Length: 234
Image (tube, rainbow, N blue to C red; front, side, top):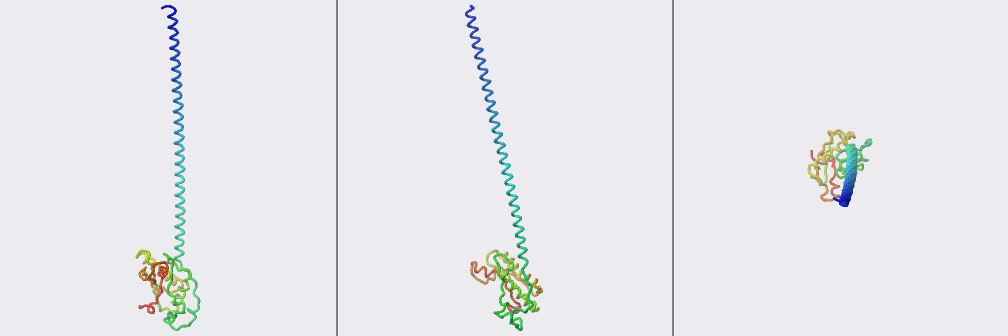
């Protein structure tokens, strides 16, 4: 092989080595770029996962806060309802005057009870819907009859509780009984012996008004004070 051939061979080897070096460098750079890109994607995924976890934690904390607030409000309402019920079960009563019932000095119980102009002519106490506490406007009626019973120890009454047609039969019977019992409790607090008063519930079975509207229902939500042996048989 002559000198020219050796020179050409050496040049070809140099070119091959140069090409190989460049290819190796390019591959390294490509591999390094892929590594950096993969690392960036991983960091973004971790950041997204952390954000989602933080959002879920805040949502759970808010849900627990709302549940706690709802429980607090429910407990406050329960206590308020219990307080209202206790207040309703305690009739407001005032001391009876020492004077005799009414202005007329009538001779006997029957005559007093039949006096249409006297305070004893009113025998019914009316209630708000689903309630059994005695409204203030009807307290004078209860007081007048209590005073009369105190003056006539031999007279007895039957308090009849009634309801409007709404509600089940069992519920209305129970509500009517509570209404009758509220009158008896008020009278006994005014000094009337319990033995002079009996109570019964008719529920919705003894309506005073036959209609099916609020006007009729208001008439049927009542307690009637019935004098045994005078208004009705023994």
